[in-house]
Image 1: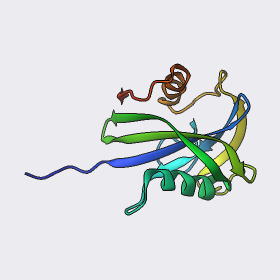
Image 2: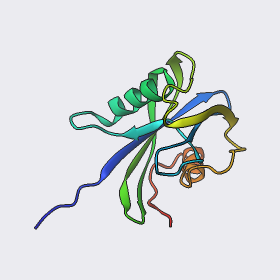
Image 3: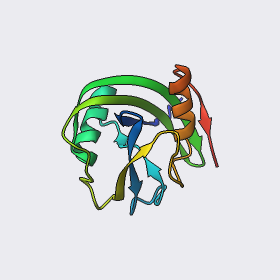
Length: 142
């Protein structure tokens, strides 16, 4: 019997009061034009939280000092399947900027209650989980 392997994806809510920092994806081939959180795939040998810290450094130039887990959202969409781990931080070194302009064409602070459109389809549900202090939801979209 063979085992399928699925990606582990980390995302970070970078908070400043009631605002969060979003990036608009571009030239990635996946969800281009959508606003999303900083994040990406876990690498071999890396812990999930270390991946979240690395992705913040690579994508927006900050280093979280205090990273808190928010929720886990296993997902399926067409040929994509994996695990989303969502963290949050409001304590970090640096100021968010676009560090990878080849992957993102905009970065902005937004009110978490008024997300720009289009936004990553799972993000409103993740924010609702955070608000309700729930840690798990399976997510599927077309």
